[in-house]
Length: 362
Image 1: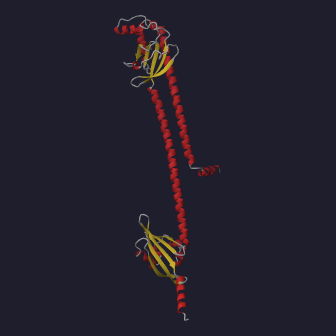
Image 2: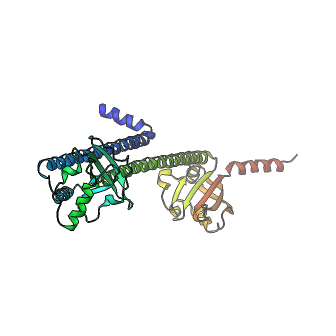
Image 3: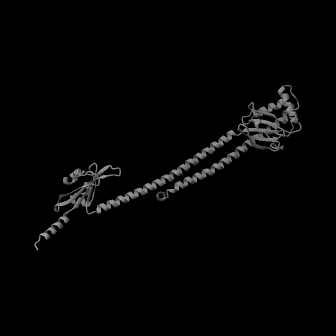
């Protein structure tokens, strides 16, 4: 019982219902996409900030416990930290933003292209983060913090190599400043993942939108088709009712010579049963004197009219006027024949009565 009620409700529901549901679903996906994008962005920021914070804290701890006394050892520690798969570079900068020591996975540091103003890296003990972009367009997520110890505490012993001497000079030139530790991480993989999710959701919205649009177009077409079918059905019903009510007999024969329509008047005149005549060959059901007239009908609208006598079981031979014409469609293709039969019995009787009156002596 409940299933029947549900089916009746679905059958009577407006066809706009699924279309409206499609657009509502598209709106839901749109707002979910925005929310998901912002959530992913916040998640990536938090994740990279935590990673950078832990790396800087670990780097400071190793400096404070076992890395005193050698600039070369400091550089090895920086190279070791920068060799992690999630780290692109590790830098030490002075208060003016100048790099005084660095470590990176590649031979060329991407951060060399980034110029910092004196106020870009505040000298504070708090962890901060920012997103920087190089001249080549590569974006990096940087976490930075002012170190707890000065550069002179990080490196006290000079080394004899040429490369180490240059590093010692650059480090010792800022003995009175506490350097800023900067960890740079490539943000491209995270942005690519977020962009892929965004493109996927946009594709889903496009699919839902096209579904709704297709539904609207289908609805318009289906309503037009239904209205056309209804008008055609009404027209056919009206035409059939009109023809069946005519005082004349009407017979329609298709181009394959089968009877496709016959009204009651024609059936009564010819003594045919409508159920037996419909679909039968015209030469088998129509009198030969009527059927042979189709051979003389040529052009559309220019039928052949002839008066013949048809044998009737009830009243014997009766005079019948027969008009035969060809039927063509809009493309001027032949589709059949039209036979119109008119009983002339009363007309002939009236003519005989008038003639008898005229011949009566005065």
